[in-house]
Amino acid sequence: MKKLFQISFVSLFLISNYVLGQQKLSLNDAVKITLENNLDIKIVENQDEIFKNNASFLNSGYLPTISSNAGINKSEQNIEIETPNNLSGKLDNMKSENSFSNISLNYILLDNSGRNFNYKKSKELSNRSKLEVKEVIENTLLQLFTVYYEVCRLFEEREIIKSSLEISKTRLERKNTEFEFGQSTKLEVLNAEVDVNTDSIKLLSSIQNLSNAKRDLNLIMNVELNSNYDLDRNVIYNSKDKISEFYKNAAENNTRLKIYDKSVDISNYELKSIKSTYLPTIGLVGSYDWNESINDNPYAFFNKNIYDGISGGINLSWNIFNSGKRITANKNAKIKLENSKIEKEKVFLIFQKELNNAYETYLNNLFILEVQEKSLLTSENNFLRNLEKYNIGIVSSIEFRRAQINLLNAKLSRNTAMYDGKLSELYFLKVAGAIIGSSF
Image (tube, rainbow, N blue to C red; front, side, top):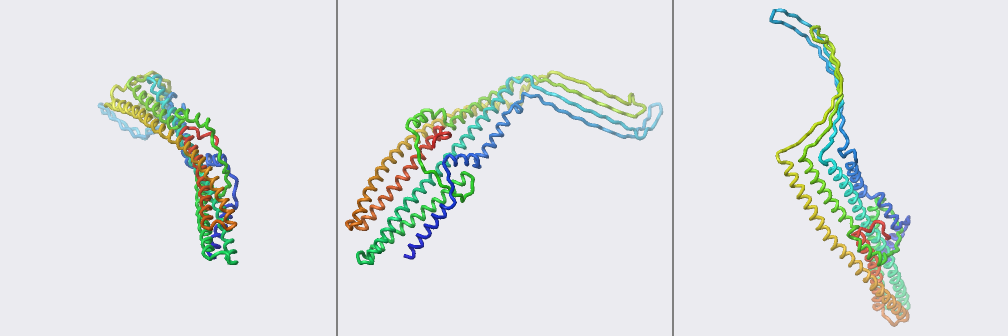
């Protein structure tokens, strides 16, 4: 009895500690918190910003380059002169100064669409990055839903086991009373006590699993790990018509397929960009220069010289042959384009397999749920009949315990089937590209 008291006390303590300080948390609230706080999403969103910056017009090559430089040089020298006519002279501390400044402009007028292909490639890289962000969000949401509903399942499991434990405790109290009046044996009392201990241990294990799952949920939402929430355990399935529509449009909406579509486009633009380098480029150049020279040498042709002016022109550049590197790059770009097409085809086959597997698993789980609900109804009726017979002494404790265990297992199986069905639906929605924005 002392051991029974200890187990019951620990169970009550854990339950009360779990309930204390709980906050209401709907699935939509969990989604909102996750989208705002999840670290994986923040990282991939920052990476997307980099691709967005790279795809801006400022990085396109369509704008000119403007550079400027300026400087000043000073010198102080001693000069000694001797001519063939034996004339000589010496000048000490002769100073000179030269100042200059320059601003130049370079602009590519024609590059055979090379800039255009590179700009489009950058745009597609940015578009693919957005899809990769979406895919991370989809995976994170699926992970969130999985853990969220696991917490719900374990909460229901805890309540089911608690209910079974109360039945076992009532039976133990009854056997103790009957034993005091000589209407039962010590063996039946001990058996009842063992059953209470067994159910109490099950409850402790369920509470521990629930606590661990709560921390998993908090980790995904990136909140305090020991936060307690009262979750919305209402499970709503999408209609069959919606599921059929999602299945029909899955190939158009699947995010991974869209990513590989972009990869093919990117490889194609990369090949076109390399091909554009085979032809010459025409550019516009211009500059403004200013220069001032001061020299105090009395024998110099001039002591001060200042000039400034504008210059401009058009140039043509043609890299006719660069040691074969361009030929190699062109060949490799063709291979990359072919590989991207092969990878797209491979991913599509995998997608078809995953979609059909997910769809059939979902339908199968709905059928299992229906069977488990019927089984639960049967177990409940069977337990109630055994309870009536047990109360009037027709059914033995062993038979009653068997009916109790059958009811417990039926409730647990039905509980598991309900959440398995929902999770299989959510996985199907993820493969079909419809997990974002769908009703949960």
